[in-house]
Length: 112
Length: 116
Image 1 (cartoon, rainbow over the protein chains, first blue to last red):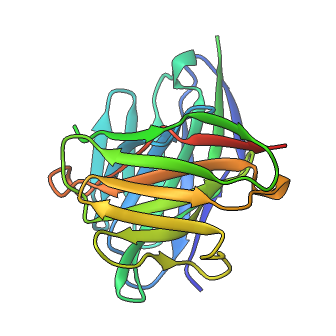
Image 2 (image 1 turned 180 degrees about the vertical axis):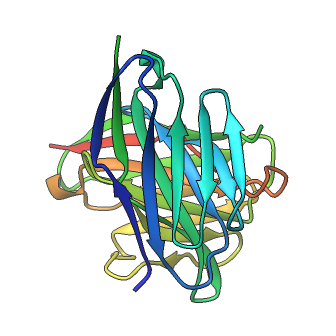
């Protein structure tokens, strides 16, 4: 069964304390691994798409990497405004269509 | 970048009534849109795929007669929750893929439905 699992479920960091969020996937036919940020009561905001193992993308304090089994979202010197839930999703060909399968998310809190 | 507009952002309705949620792609055409449901502190669960000019494709376990989807144009999809009950209370989110947006899926801002 296709599965996307994120860890940890929740993470509290002090401002400036770097860390990494994990997204592991057991899927067949991956057509892209997506990272999103979601603030409470809002829709997900697109961050990155990764397509092949070894690929890396950066945006401000965030860097996403991809291997054949997992993806990491590295956050460097985070600020309180980086507090949010971070979601990863795998795009899969399912029944002739391409669909996103989401992990359960990591709730990140950055304390000032 | 691509923008998906979703309305209303919040709605409260009485049990047994119907509620319509609109999802519009503002600066691109979307032949396919997706509807998700999200319970508190849980992830997004795909409910259905909305196809312009044809019937929606529903995920297993989603009642097509309760969650009516209409995709009448290349920029508008609607989700109607019929005969709503308190257990239908949730956060509903739509999304569309912008072909020019590095393959990314753009999401609406979500609709918080409360059935009383």
